[in-house]
Length: 408
Image 1 (cartoon, rainbow, N blue to C red):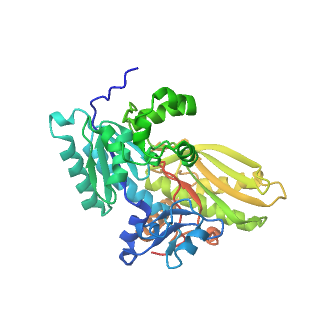
Image 2: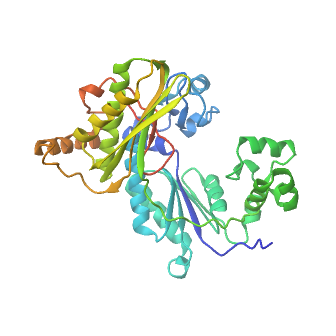
Image 3: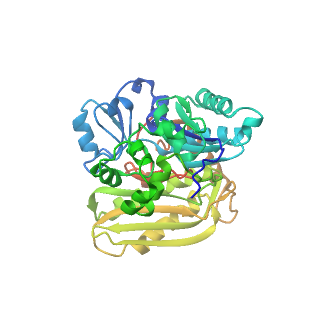
């Protein structure tokens, strides 16, 4: 079996505490203070937290109720998906302009393949200049790791944080990884970590010293993958970034509800926000889907194809109609959602038979207000009663940031 490490140059870049950093760009008074972003109800969880909050033992995915007990003085924000999406796109644009091949693996993470660039510029110099440009033009802190593959670069980034950079030279992968915890290996989750600890395996060096057949015997195929990563072996290519073909948002209620008017109000607010995201991203949608999950966890969806559009006047009535057709049971509702799919690039064009020209002017005026003051600053009266939305997937594919009901 050939375990030779190829001579590549892969950069992993990660925006430090991205949601927190975005909020601090808006409000400098948040700098240096423990900050939690996520749902504030008993069902809510921490989507992101500042380093100051982490000092109290708080981490992402922790129940917000527990986090507030650990740090009662923490500032809690719902977050604003439009803001995060905009800043993520700003960073993406800079990377796209600078490098020949990159992969956007989440809203705040990127892999960049600089193989061959060293013949002309020097990979470390180019990566460092790119990082400094991102910091200067966006105001966001960002860290990176540079090595021969994705795994080592990602681990190097975590060691570089906060707001720093590390290069691991070819041949030094094993020695760099050896003293680190096995929890640092990207594919090692909590369950696998506990299993490794039960076997007395806590440092990566221990795995490096084990025969690969032993890891395979205990953990199967996953054991082989873990052994390779522990030894700095990863042949995974950088996959060219492609934009998502759908955007969606869902709302999980703190308390299951049968309030028909409330459900309609929230659907309108969610759909209106997604349509705004379409226009902001210069996209059009050709398929609308509405989703309902009842208190017994039975989930139902209904969708409709439409001519490509990014118009409130066209999409909102269809969302409401789909909801009315879908909601026929007299059970409490746990979750509702809207998805716009079959996305293509292109600006909205006025339908002469269905829209007046002043409708287009209205969209532009509303979108300018949202861009400047936040995506919830202006909305239709029919959606005004909606609170923050708990799950949203922007074009960037990232894990779901939270929408705010906050005034900038």
